[in-house]
Amino acid sequence: MIWFPLKIPSWIRWPSPSTTRHVFYGVLIGFSLSLTSTSFTLYIQSRRRRQRRFAAKFEQRPIELRSDEIVSGVTGLIGNTPLVRINSLSDALGVEILGKAEFLNPGGSVKDRVALRMIDDAERLGLLRPYTGSRIFEGTVGSTGISIATIARARGYDCTIIMPDDVAEEKVKALKALGADVERVRPASIVDKKQYVNLARQRAAKFGRLDSTDKSSPNSKKKRPNIIESNSASVLVTTTASRVEFDMEDPHSKDEYLSKPRGYFADQFENRSNYEAHYNGTGPEIWRQTNGRLDAFVSGAGTGGTIAGIGQYIKSKNENVVIVLSDPEGSGLYNKVKHGVMFDRKETEGTKRRHQVDTVVEGIGINRLTNNIDLALPIIDDAFRITDAEAVSMSRYLVKNDGLFLGSSSACNLVACVKLVRRMGWAEGQKVVTILCDSGSRHYSKPLLPRFTLMSALRNDEYLRKAHIPMDPQIVEDLLLPLPPLEPL
Ligand SMILES: Cc1ncc(COP(=O)(O)O)c(C=O)c1O
Image (cartoon, rainbow, N blue to C red; front, top):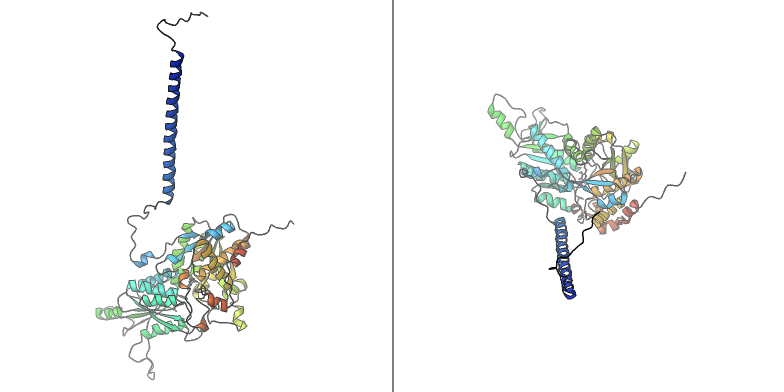
């Protein structure tokens, strides 16, 4: 290796120590300033980013509807309801309890679907024609009446709703506001001619009664309705036309026949359109919304249309999904499912306070078999009897924990969901879907007639106290308590 002697040129001179010190301090200050300003800039940038992220979290979402998503009239708003996760119950149980938010339908309940389907089917079959002065008759505890009244207005019909006089006053007010004729009658058994469903049928028959006397029996002075044959034996259609058939050759006769007002008794209990509304609508919606991944479906039954239609559709897709009935006190369906006989203990006790079903729960529970119940029975796997105290407790628990103010049948359904999850020992995210039929706002009026006041009492503390029904969310909290560990074998 060759070493060259390092020779510093004579013109380079080391600066004096004081100059070196000044240069050193200059560089140090410059470096510190640049470091500080870089850190400051980075800090401001990250702070802005954080602020932007925070703001985005609470920013109003942009409108997500497609530009062509304009529905046609009030009937376009029916169905396609969301599935809502009931957070309190799902978190406590370790499963997904999902409610189909039917209270968001324009008429406020699941019954909008049924009313629309019954009217659509009647129009399709030529039984009803809009703007002919025709009138729809129905016997209902209220929800179906509100749905029929809403759609009747939009489609050019009048309607008469016959209902028991012990249902919540809010329903009567809503019906009258929608222009329905409302007839309130004493609750009575189905074998009684004055029972509200039987009366609705009689009113529809009377609507089509002609002034001429019955020609078929010369001695009779009775006036007979002109009946048009319908799709179901129970759906009664009458006409004020003088003949029920028209002469194809004679346009005048045809015109007279078609333009005369009709009376239509919809009969949701027996009408198959009720079942079809759920088999073709609600069932497929639930299937799509869960991507076909659900473990159980829970529902009460009033006419049976909801549990029959949705249950049959789900079973047609996957037989392993468990279909469960939630049945209130006083209804005979629980025993029909569990033991094959339609029976409720309260019926024999002599303590029965109401004619149809003895409970604070409105809209579900029945003590007779109907076409729609018949369609449901083969696919129901299990049933739970829900007490009034449990339904009241659930309704209050949901308000307290989820801000959900639901009707009594929804509360019943959710108690049954909890009981099912406990019975099955599920805690690993299994999916249970139920129906949130209507909102609690239809149930809190003070009943007008104290002697028939069990229905509509869900939010009526004074009534519940008198009936010795506890109003205690703790009942549900106890159902949700973690299960004790299993004893070793
Ligand atoms: C509030 C409410 N929930 C549930 C139901 C039961 O539905 P379904 O008649 O389909 O059995 C009804 C029926 O009238 C109702 O009014």
